[in-house]
Length: 287
Image 1 (cartoon, rainbow, N blue to C red):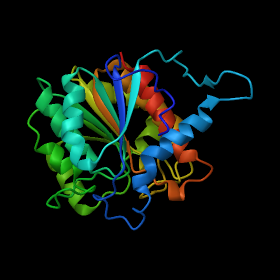
Image 2: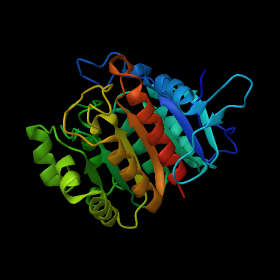
Image 3: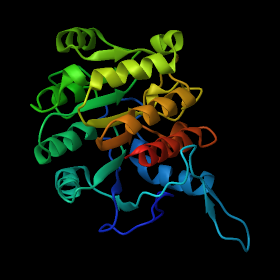
Image 4: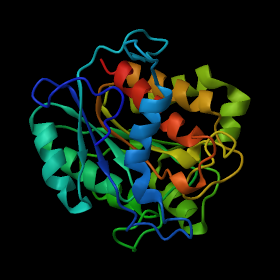
């Protein structure tokens, strides 16, 4: 199996553990077929576009603007959705950080529930998504993720943030108002600027550790065409990468996922490469 390009360690010595969940069972999208292929697609694109190879020479990997990526990373492959509880439980128990490639967004609540059981105290989440995913009463569904997170006692909504929303439904808006979750829209980012917005987000989080979830449809389709549910008017690739970096640099991260990529609709590997770069920025920014 092809590994994510930053794989450089065995499990025991690693600090970050990457694994994929090749599953689209929680999606109701008309474009859902293909989402299950995303984890391996991200890995293959990372090896093709984030590693320079030439005949007779040693491959050279891409680093980041923050410098050389020295953190130990182990890519353990893919797991069945039903195995998330056991896999994440062991990773967190072993004092490592899970970084998960989806699959559809419904995997998020399973991951966060396990993390919540294995760490003490409250934590916040930073949820990058064009859609609020706050339509309740549907169970294991990619549009009900925030409903499931709201049920977890040590997940603090008053310290959490939804970034990139631009396609809410009526139920979403009602639940958002009730929950008090901070919502940052692409328009607000465009008008106020990254520095002001990142300061606002960091202030909201306060001193709590965070879980970061990146639905790639948060990005504009011009930057990420290969997603399950694209919506015009999203973040640029640069805005997404800078916000991820600024947030993870300043806060203690307990886990992350990157979801909703659909290779069937990608163009020139743009979305796969963006996913690889988001993962790299998360890894290098962990402190």
